[in-house]
Amino acid sequence: MNFTPEQTRLNGTRSVDAFDESNHDQRFRVDASVLEIVDTTHRRLLQEVDLAALSALEGDAARRAVENVARRLVGATGLQLSAPEREDVVMRVIDEVLGLGPIEQLLHDETISEVMVNDFDEVYYERDGVIYDYPIGFRDRDHVLRIIDRITSAVGRRVDEASPMVDARLADGSRVNAAIPPVVPRGPVLTIRKFRRDKHTLAQLIENATLPVSVAEFLGLCVRHRLNVIVSGGTGSGKTTFLNALSEHIPPGERIVTIEDPTELRLQQRHVIAMEARPPNIEGKNPVTQRDLFRNSLRMRPDRIIVGEVRGSEAFDMMQAMNTGHDGSLTTIHANSPRDALSRIENMVLMAGYELPVRAIREQVASAIDLIVHLARMSDGSRRVTRVTEITGMESEVVTAQDIFVFRQEGLGPNGEVRGSLGSTGLMPAFADRLRARGEDVTRFVQGPLSGNEVAAWTR
Image (cartoon, rainbow, N blue to C red):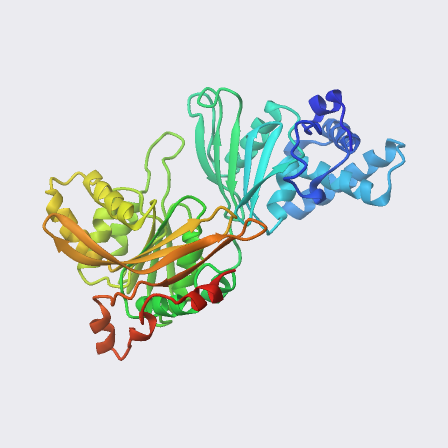
């Protein structure tokens, strides 16, 4: 389908020359003429509808009112449209008035995890760890600003030149970040991390080749018997999803307090108290930090404390809690490796402002953490557990660790898929005696490095 330069400039749809045909889904392609009809109908609708009265209506009533007017206006154009085209135009007009415009259909696609607007005519989305071009853009930069304002005003936030960056959340829990000039000179940028409604289990992660059965069973034992586990990895590596899956091994009788900023965890248990940090209000006052929540959670008689992501001075309180009876705590952290995760925790404890010697901090860390599970997003978009590392203690000034399981990449398949396996290093974890005293024998999980045949068996 060919788009003229004039059509591209009017409706934000990228021309064929600018659009990467090899990196998109055909389902999102739409004729530029259809988008012009949407634009015209939308403008006429705004002239007829009282937006103030519309905002006073309940969601379904507002949608029905807009739909009725949109159908009448489309019919009045006299254009010869097929039934599917007519429905498409009406739905897109509704999205413009009540939703997030051209990106609304991306939010309804359950397979898409992230939506990224770099500029009014430059939109991307992520599916299964791979970023794709989206062929439909906004009309202009003001169009993007109106959508950003619609999102932020709904949650009592604002974004302007005095406050050019904002974090917000959609009604379904999806996380939103917006930035406008002057901090992004080219134009407004909008990023939406979609909230996953489904609850991933370890069985699903095994099916997706994130980790093999033996490692999943091993980690399940560790969680069930209250080892302190940190899930590390880079952005988009699946840390929160993995933490959700691990939670299925927490016994149902335990009281769990979760601390997040923002809420993303969907635990498997019923006895869960979810706490969420709050940013400063519109006057820049009264924030509630994760550290505030952590301190309060200690008074709520938790059996376990789960921090969605440790990212600041709350790391100090978390280490203290792990060392004073709150075993079985879980959290995630951004890091490039297990060793980097330890360094980040050390730096975050220093951010708490206590004048502690580095050795004392490292002793706290070594005593508090039992396991670090590291995930990575591979070149084919898949997420894999690449290391399961035990923290074994201190040696001189250094926190010591040993890898229990390591991912060995064996190359790429014909379609670029990563081939490899997560296998035992043959090292027995130092906490094996603790589990053995509780009737669990981990020897079967660490019999030794995988053989060549076993490597092939786990290759996907």
